[in-house]
Image 1 (cartoon, helix red, strand yellow):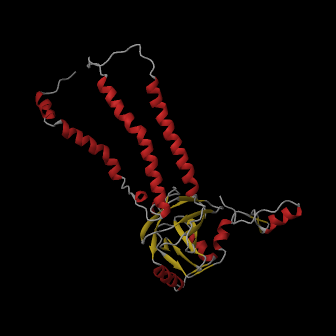
Image 2: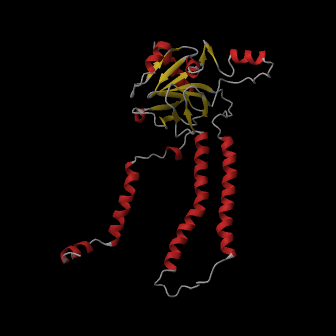
Length: 326
């Protein structure tokens, strides 16, 4: 092998161990720094977001009760029973310890049982289809995921907005969600749960903002070249400010009819915020039902054609329900 010059060896020794360790940590942390990660999930602004944050923290803490001791003991055992430590006990015939078996299996079993109970309980409490209990009447919002933009329809007021979601503080928001084509996912990290938007189907989500602010909303499922720009602002304001926004939307003069919607469904990105003062009454339902038409009729489970066929076959009637949901 070729021997390095003494000058190069001396130059390399000039860097102390602490500096080299610090540099190694910097290199390891660089990917995390460059990702631009935010902590929105751990800084919630609504009761659903708070419960989700608490579940994440609690589950992580319970799992770390196993992970941290295992990491520490691994390092301790590697150091204590290293080859050069002649004072460590040497037991080549050792094979079993009841106390160790109880600790190794007992503690993980208890933690898994606790996690199972907690997740079972919170899964039902945080069910996206479960309405939020409140003395305030909920606000209905219909959401359509387009390529690559978000359309929000307010059926109670007959208005709509593109790439902006104003909501009143302290009011439960009942979302009905669908997609025009590619599957997407509606996600407002500071308010809580993420729910998928699927073409030809309708899902639900219930959120609430407990404090005013502007919260980032985004798509959480890759949907093509415009995915990175498919985000919107959720503006939580007082009821008076929300009512003023409704008045501005009604005065916008834009109409969201079938022709306007056909223009919106064309793929585009970085679309400006647009308000619509009038919306076709069954626009959202038409988007959901677009793949259910047959011979001019809608073949949905609760459609008149289906209900008539059930009645003609003397089958028990279907329970009253909302449009087909997944």
